[in-house]
Amino acid sequence: MDKFIIKGIIFDYGGTLDTNGGHWGAVIWSGYEKYQVPVNLSSFQEAYAYAERQMAIQPIIKPEFNFLEVLKAKLKVQFEYLIAAGYDLEKELADKIAFDGYSLAKDTVARVKPLLVALGEQYPIVMVSNFYGNLKAVLADFGILSYFKAVVESAVVGVRKPDPAIYALGVEAMGLPAAEILVVGDSYSKDMAPAKAVGCQTLWLKGQTWGEDKLQDISAADRQFKTIFDLRDFV
Image (cartoon, rainbow, N blue to C red):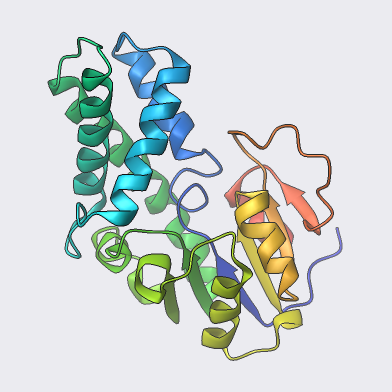
């Protein structure tokens, strides 16, 4: 397999390094199913989207929150939305789903660490992520913050994916021409398309689809792969 000719790597975080291609909507929905939360998928998707909007505009997430605290806050808002919509829910189930999600992320990141160490010996690495203002605290809790030359976080820089401007900031932080940088992410619309728009090379971690299974044009993804642990086959 021909490898990318690159001098640096930009990673997405959520859905890429913490779930190995699993969208967090799908991960959390699996928790609803596991604990038999009496909510249909359509209502869950509404609650999920509502919670994401609230967390983006309200100071719900504190800068020092680790990922367990993020998930607890996220599930709390979801459950409150669903209860207000008429669902009879046991609130303690929200914390159980949050703990399972945190355990999944912690385990996945632990398995990703050796990959990041190996890549870091060869390339500078930058992170570009839509997050809530506490991403450095999350990365520190998982023991990988020091692996990144810079962390470009939407809530901090004031621009969100899919705006290509956030990837332009990642390129600036890397200090290399965009054409010499590989972007690795799980979302076509939020990672591949904007990264390609600023001139980066792109590798799509096409795992568990969540609204991107009917894309007509995937030309912004130079290549695709199925598991983050195969990344060394490409670089």
